[in-house]
Amino acid sequence: KMQSMALSTSELPSSKIGSSAQTTVTKAETVQQYFSQTIKYGGFRSLYTGLSFPLAAQAVYKANVFTVNQTARSAMLEYRNLERHDSDLLTSSANDISTSDTLVCGMLAGGCNAFIFVTPVEFVRNQLIEQHSRLAFEALLHERKFGVARTVGTTGRNYIKQGPFDVVRTVIHKYGIGGLWKGAGITVMRDSLGCGM
Image 1 (tube, one colour):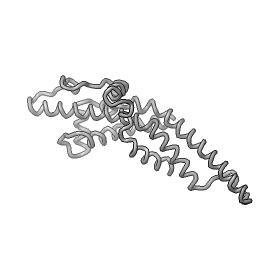
Image 2 (cartoon, one colour; image 1 turned 135 degrees about the horizontal axis):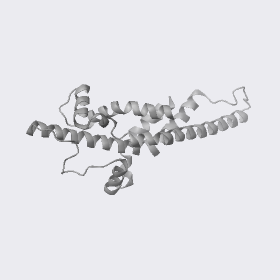
Image 3 (cartoon, helix red, strand yellow; image 1 turned 180 degrees about the vertical axis):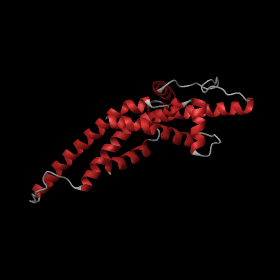
């Protein structure tokens, strides 16, 4: 669990830069430009925008993946042993399942986890990253237009979400509970393959 949290913490800056590159309309063309704009308009702390929710969810992620995987493996083993018994093929591998069965169990665990937990958590994280990137871009435009830097988050035009729970509340109010599952298909596919392999 600690390894997952440390990995999440260390991967977040690259995730932040990647999300910024995907969601913003800035004139930055290189990773270094995105990085420097992020630091300039949000400080070093902005590299960790949206970290609290995914970090807190790591324990839930791992517990779910291990539980579903173990349940699926037990069911698969029971099924395979029943199949072997019916065909009178009792072998020394009665307590093991095949590699393809292991793949299926891992994919099932990853898919369940991705649909139930990962999709809404990543959606919330990405909303916070997108908001910060948008505000940083507005600050950049303000600086270019007026020659004076504006602190990120001092815009009066748009509602600024204050954190993950504020994002959840806003999305549910605007789109319903299903709004938190935007992008579920690709997330399920990614995590199914990732946990299966």
